[in-house]
Image 1 (tube, helix red, strand yellow):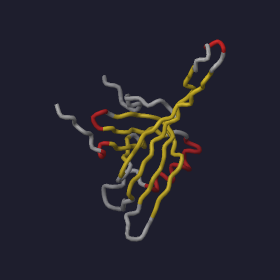
Image 2 (cartoon, rainbow, N blue to C red):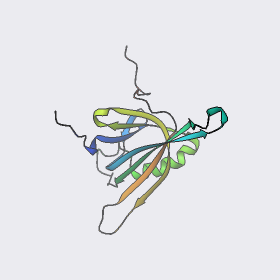
Image 3 (spheres, rainbow, N blue to C red):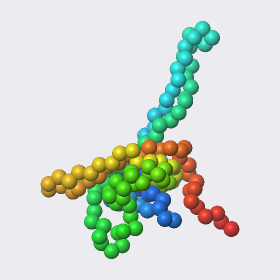
Length: 151
C-alpha cells in the first residue's frame, strides 16, 4: 500500500476566546518541539553505569504567518498579529490561554500556554509577516477542556 503523506496546511492553530476557538489568521507554518531536562548520575551504586531521569519537559509551538487586512467583513472572528501582541500584555494578569493545534489525520491537541515572543516584519515588495512562540505550560491532551459534556 502506498504511503499517504500529510499536507502541511493540515496544521492549524486556534486560541480559546469568548466561548469559541478562534483561528490564527493566515499561517504559513507551525512547528512543535519538546526538550527534556534529564538528570544523569554515575556512581559506585550504579556500578559505573549512567542513570537518567527526566525531570521536566519544555515544549514550544513556533508559528509563522502573513498579515492580512482584517477590516473585511467576516474576518474579525480570527486572531490577528495585533491580537497576539496584545495577548502578550494581557497574559501578565490573565495567565495562560487555551490553545488547539490541529494536526490533520493525527487529530487535535489542546494545551495551556503563553506567548513568549512575537514579531512582525514589513519589507518593501513582500507580504508582511509575523511570528511567535508559545511556551506550553501543561501536558497536551487530545480532550477538549472546553467541550460541553453530552447529555
